[in-house]
Amino acid sequence: MRQIVLDTETTGLSPKKGDRIVEIGCVELIDRKLTGNTYHQYINPERDMPEEAFNVHGISDEFLADKPVFSQIVKEFIDFVKDSELIIHNAPFDVGFINHEISILGSTKKSLGIQVIEDCSVIFDSLKLAKNLRPGQKNNLDALCRSYGIDNSNRDLHGALLDSEILADVYLAMTREQTQLSFTGQEKNAGSNQEPIIRVDENREKTIILLADEEEQLAHQNMMEMIEKKSGQSLWPK
Image 1 (cartoon, one colour):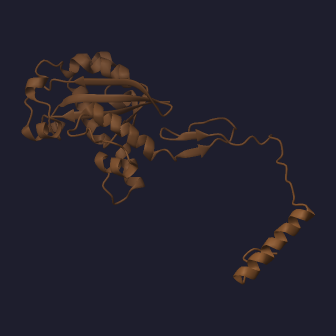
Image 2 (cartoon, one colour; image 1 turned 180 degrees about the vertical axis):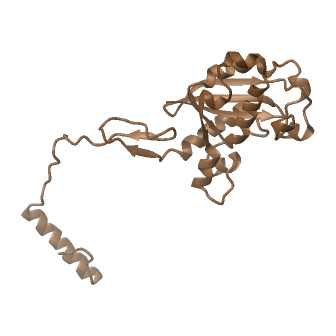
């Protein structure tokens, strides 16, 4: 099973108001193990960086000036994430931005073979999972790190690659106990966020049951009588 933990940084909160993606970070999980394979790209948004957004991630206009625009990196990005499950915290936000970027590609869009990111990847919202597991609590990344004992001391500012690495640890912690039985006696994935366990083979050798002999039964009885004498009662049947 291939999963990609993804995060983006943007110029603001709404692509409909002209905000754009400025950074994409991804880390790869295969069979719930980090592979070390990552994708990371800064992107020139072709617009100015609002001060509010800069205060969140620290990415400046000057830094982005020589970075590629989205149309120049989109094929490499799609090739990395396709045929995987995308794990995203507050998925509607990031997916909305990615799909907006795809929608304004023009002629480049035809070569991708997709209209939206969902055409090549399955989306999993880890925020929705966190809310189900921790109703009524804060479920942002910092709160989840505190809850699951994950070190995020290097996270002074938001960063797409760093946040995706942290989210991968959070996701694995949140889904550690989610397993299902395989009724075929084989390992079987229960779903995108679950680990398999193996059912005990029904054809295994029968368990040998050894009963206590007379000497052991007498020793047990003597122990019960001693406990009852010292405590005034015995909770175990004689």
